[in-house]
Structure formats: C-alpha cells, structure tokens
Image (cartoon, rainbow, N blue to C red; front, side, top):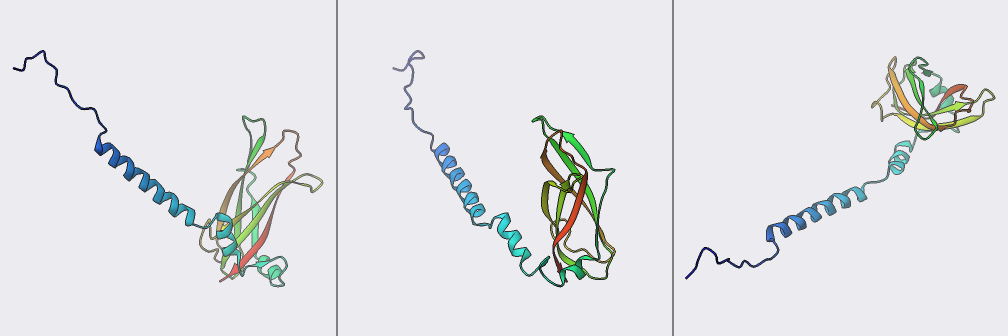
Length: 169
C-alpha cells in the first residue's frame, strides 16, 4: 500500500528537448559563421570597386578631378580628448561636383598636417558609392570621419583633402 510519506523515486536524466535546442542553436550559429566566412573582406570589395578607376598616374585624372571641390566645414570639425590621453578629430566636409559629369566612384584621402606640411595622420574613404550611389552635377555630399591617436602637443595646423581615384558614368 502506498502512503503519503513514501516518496516516488524518479529517474534523473537529460532533458531531450534541451539537447535538441542546443544542437539546433549550434547548427544555426555554424551556418551564420560559414556564410560570413564566404563573403570577401572589405579590402577585397574596395579593390574590386577601384578596378578601372582613374588614379593620379592616368592622364585623364587631372581633367576629371578639376570639377570636384572638397571643403572642410571648420564650424563642425572638433577635437576631443579621449580617456586614453590621446585626441580624436571629428572632421566634417563637403564634396561638390561643379562640372557636368556624373561620378560613380570617388575615393578621397584626408590628412591632418602640421604648419610645415608634415602629415600627422591620414585616412582614405570611398565617398561614392559608400555615402551615395552617384555624385551628379551640382550635387553636394556631406562627409564625416574620425581620425584618432593625436598627441596633445601635435601641431594640427590644417586639414587637406585629395581625390585619389575617380570613375565617370
């Protein structure tokens, strides 16, 4: 006869639903990581975009870049001290197409230079097609980028912009 004081002995085991959920989770994570590993790196994607672009070494480059005007927006450009003791610059500018051609690729180099024209830091960015798909005649594209790692006593005298690669539609 079973009484209230008798305890039922249950077998302790592993919950099968927990194991199934764990296996499904591992398969999903593995699939996502496998998909991401197959994508080309940012450098490879950028190199593919730059194929066929005119650079400083090509004769057409000077004629194409004369209509691209890049201006630093000094009112929005700020320098900010970081917790590591270095200074970051948040640089704002505008790219304007004053010509009659539509640009499908525009790579720009921005450099912070000293009063003696020594480069402290520089960075290359793809304005077109990353910011916008095209730079049409008369259009202005605002730029914002960050340059890190300046020391407090660095002579951050000027910001220089330079077009490094360009493609025309």
